[in-house]
Amino acid sequence: IGIIMKKILTLTASFILVASSVFAGSMNIGVSVTNASLSASGTETVNSAGSGGGGAAQAIAEKDGSATLASIFVERQFETQKDGLSISLGLDFVPMTGEIAKLGGGDGTDATVEAGKLLTLYVQPTFLINDKVSLYAKAGYAQGDLDISNVTRQATTAGTASTDTDQSKDLKGTVLGFGAQIAMNNDMFIRFDAARTDFDTINHTNSNSKKLTADAEMDRLSLVIGKSF
Image 1: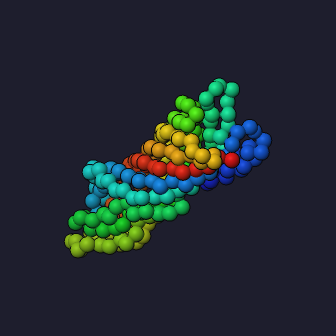
Image 2: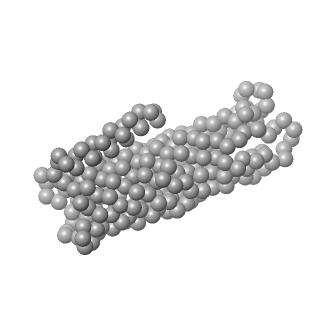
Image 3: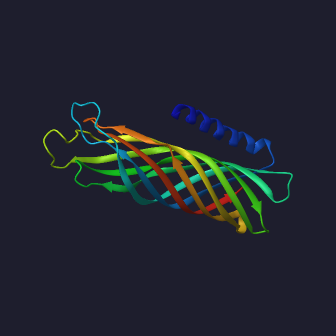
């Protein structure tokens, strides 16, 4: 899936560049500052050295974390035959990584969890309300990194603590959102954007046959500053 997504994103970026010179419309570029909140729940089995199974799965209570992230975006905006309606095809990239949470507690492992390098491909229909204000919805697909670092083992019964080191997992999922855009002078604009990314289930088995699954959602509230060409 990751290879396919990279090809799709590459083709989309190429299409945006080609379309800018072929189809009527405008190019939008800009930056955003985002408050990202990640919540996750899942299941785990107990450590079971040498058993190969790990025992019955137990539910993990939902955990929450947050980080401030910055992103850059580029869009190709197409005008339609319907007055006041345009459709944008865009790419948004979070180049940085932010700490989401610190895990710890008495079950054998402490760790730092970071998320970032999130690339989102999206379609965004926009409805013009008046000369200054527009409302929009968006739908897309995101892919990024989930890094687990600073892994340490707490004191546990001999043979139950894993020997795992730093881990990296792929984040993939669908994006739905909405927002408002306000036109400024010199083709500048600002947006107030809200979006939720529903990530696919993450699976991990540690060195001691402990199996974990996590279902995560990320909510992003963003202030966006952009310019049209």
